[in-house]
Length: 151
Image 1 (cartoon, one colour):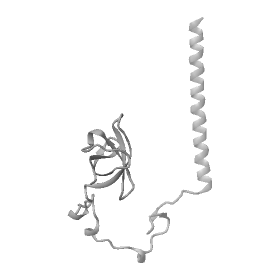
Image 2 (cartoon, helix red, strand yellow; image 1 turned 180 degrees about the vertical axis):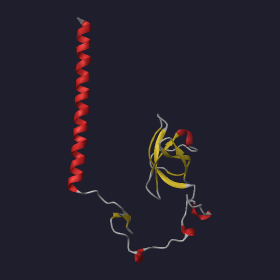
Image 3 (spheres, one colour; image 1 turned 90 degrees about the vertical axis):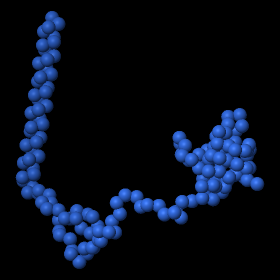
Image 4 (tube, helix red, strand yellow; image 1 turned 30 degrees about the vertical axis):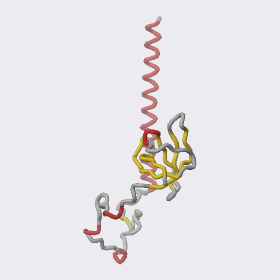
């Protein structure tokens, strides 16, 4: 009895598969006929205009822009000596938890908030102290290190 049930399920699955294949073939033929009847084939040959848009008309030669090969920069331009900002920054301690050993410092120049850990402190700090610090890449962004009290 189990064998006949299994055979019945297999034959049903096979019928469904064949029916699906036939429906797919009919849809494909219908789309093909529809395309032939409409006579549309889309843009046979596409151009790119001066704005970078695809068009079926050739671009106007008067709008052509000449680009010098030397003006094309590949990669990141090299930094000049004067480009680097001062590594020592000024800030104010907005929050510091002595029991957990971390806090945040707000940079006075750009109002950015930086995380600081007790391991990055030179002096003992508390909230609202004015400090100087350096930035170092941390796990979640830039961290304040070498934090010293401002005299």
